[in-house]
Amino acid sequence: MQTPVVSVVIPTRNRPELVVRAVRSALAQTLQEIEVVVIIDGPDAATVAALGEIGDERVRWVERETSGGAPAARNHGVDVAIAEWVAFLDDDDEWLPEKLETQLTRAKASGVPLPIVGSRLYMRTPRAELIMPRRVPAPGEPISEYLAVRHGLFHGDGFIQTSTIMAPTALLRKVPFADGLRRLQELDWTLRSLQEDGVDLIYAEEPLVIWYADENRPRISFDAPWKQSLDWLRETRPRVTPRAYAALAMSVVGSMAAASRSPRVFFDLLGEARRHGKPSVTDYVTFLQVWLVPAGPRRVVRDFFLSRSRRKGKKQLPASAR
Image 1 (cartoon, rainbow, N blue to C red):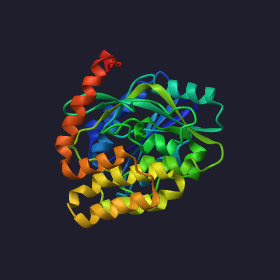
Image 2 (image 1 turned 45 degrees about the horizontal axis):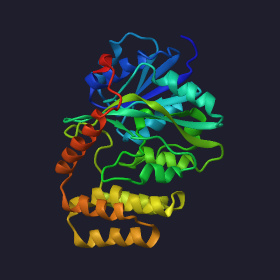
Image 3 (image 1 turned 180 degrees about the vertical axis):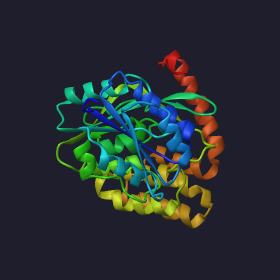
Image 4 (image 1 turned 30 degrees about the horizontal axis):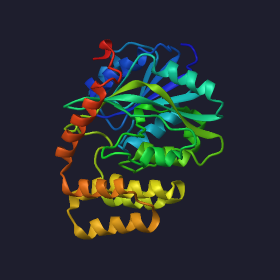
C-alpha cells in the first residue's frame, strides 16, 4: 500500500451496517492514497466481522478494551494515524467522492500554515434535506461569531460538523478532542485549535458530506446534561466574542436546558448571557422560542421553511448519492 496522504478516522460501536456504509464512502474517494482507521469503542464482534469482509488493505481497525466515548475514540485514531492529514467521519454519515481531494486543494491554496478545512454538507432529516451551513465565513468575520450567531430563527448560518473536518495530524495531536465532553465536541475543538499560531478555519463551498440527522437514532455523542454544556460555555468565554457568548448561552445551551422547564435555570442563563455577552434581539427571540416551543415542533417548522428556501434555487444532492 502507498503511503497515505490522509488518514480517515471513524469511531463506531455496535452499528456494523452503518459503519460499513461510511467506510465504503471513504474508499470511494477520488483521492485513493488514504488509510481508513476504524476505532471500535469497546468489544464488538459484529463490527469486527463486518469490517473483515470489506477486503481492502487500506482499512484497519482498533478494538478498544472499554468504551471511552467519541472524543477518546477520535483521539485514539489520531494517535495511530500515519498520514500528514486526518479527516473524521462519523459512522452514520457518508462522504461524496470528491470530498478529500477538494479539501486538499483548498488547504494548499489557502496559504495557511495549519488549516482546518471544513465543508458544507447535505443535512438529511426524516422530513427534509437541507444544505448547511447556509453560507461560509465572510472576510474578517470572527470565527466564533460565524459559528455561533444566528441571523434568523433557525441555526445553520454558520456551522461545523465532525464529518466535514480535515486538519493536520500534528495539530490534532497538539490539540486533542476534549475527553468526556458529550456535546459541542467539534465546536470546542475548533475554538481551542484557533488559539494556536498558524491555524485558521477555511471552507469548501461545495456540500461534500451527507449528514443523517436521524433524531430517533442514538449517537455516540447524542445526549448530555445541560449543566456540562454550561460549564463548557463558561470555560470557553475567553475564546469567543461577547456577541458569540450571548448566542451560545441563549440558543445552544438554552436549547439543551429548556427541557428542565425550570424558571430558575431560565433566568440564570439569561443573566449569564447579559453579564458576559451582548445579546441581540434575535438572541432574545430565539431564547423564548426554545423555552416555549418543544424541540420536535421546532424541527418540523425549521425543516419546512428551510427546505422551501432551498427549493427556490439551492443546489440539489447529486442523483448518485440519493
